[in-house]
Image 1 (tube, one colour):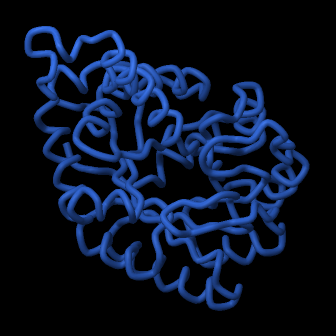
Image 2 (image 1 turned 90 degrees about the horizontal axis):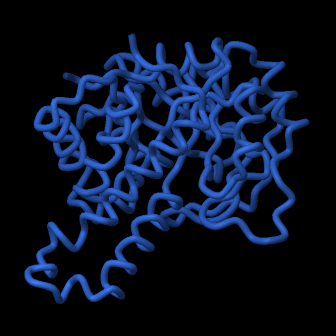
Image 3 (image 1 turned 90 degrees about the vertical axis):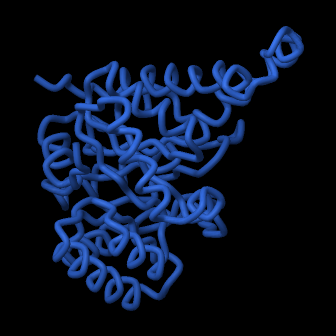
Length: 288
């Protein structure tokens, strides 16, 4: 089964007031765990890779081929979008050439006019290859692969200008952050989300930094137009916790418990469990 772009999947989610999960892969185990969770829930899924994770794994083409090969090996039948997460201009172009089905060009740190111009160029190039494009307005708090945002709220006017470039889905800064949420986090700004959603009634909106946002806030955001939910940290924490318990229980010292296939198995299953749990929050309908 080949990759699909995100247009039909996220367009239907926006119209149907549900969401589709976008999960970051970090290695082989992550890839298999995400695919397994989506297949068991029988829902479409977006697998994405950041610039840093791609470098760690051996490059954009290797990541693309890994996901494609695992889909074949695991007999995955649900639709899978292969996506670049928070890519700069060069990374977006490289992933288009590598055969991804979707890319995010994150130019939020550029002057607005330059961001719009480069986004439009990426849109034209990606659309010529049948790929979908995500862009960002405002910024997502925290740091991811060297791209830092202070969490500025997205401007409604900037969102309208970005939509005019032809992007297929739009990430908006609404108080969300990457990584763990601090105890004094103020929560999502639903008023701004509603303003953007009302101004762009057909545009699928994206919530980055989904890990750690309380379920009730996620569900409210989805009701207001969020169609794509990004998850990475939550899976990392689940993997680390399960792996720690395995080692602290001394299981790595029992028989061949040190074998990486056994050592990594509990963490890998924890990723799948997390994927399935969060899919349950999103209201994603099963595929007929």
